[in-house]
Length: 257
Image (cartoon, rainbow, N blue to C red; front, side, top):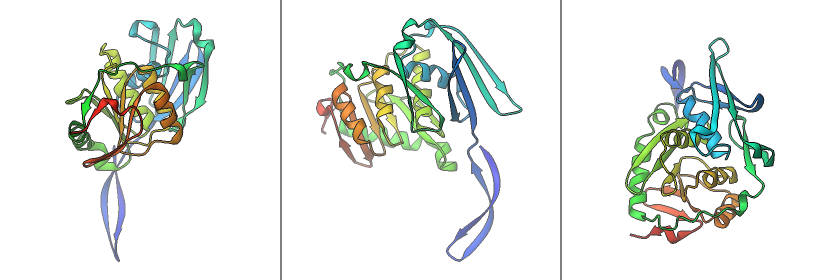
């Protein structure tokens, strides 16, 4: 964050104030010498972002899948470069889609991704606990409260938030929390993803790769996201605000209480 002197107007009055504004940088990720994507992101937790991006794109399943990772910060241009080497003979079976997030983001996905089913139906949560998680989630958004310029994401169990991150891009924030838990070998098959942003289909792709059974958003899903979540048996919840929410798919995991 940086402080800027600005003019604030309210009604017919104005005043000069200092305002917090979020800073941004660019992360370019290359795989085996080939540039994959350039992400406009917040500078914090860059390594988490790299691991999370590779994991939620289906390129790696464990940290040891990475043969080499070299991260370079170019201070002059305020850019980050991540050169990754992985041994994945099946990379040719992946396709790229342009994400609706920040920068030249690309999501990799396998041709058969829409055939994958999340089978962890034993994961259940009370609706009252969802409201408590969302209250905690909103209270954690310190950078958003100061700047209004970031998205938030968290991974939780049924009782508490395990990891919380913020970034100017909603995809990046999700990758950062996924990357943190992935790096620490925490299984996500019984966890919950919480996001502040809209949920398009590519966010559902990420949850499929991460095998997360429940995703909760403060905002709206798209029609494609709902259809994909229903195919994959992912519980998709939108407009989770106060004591209200909409369940769009796989409601068997939600206990109304």
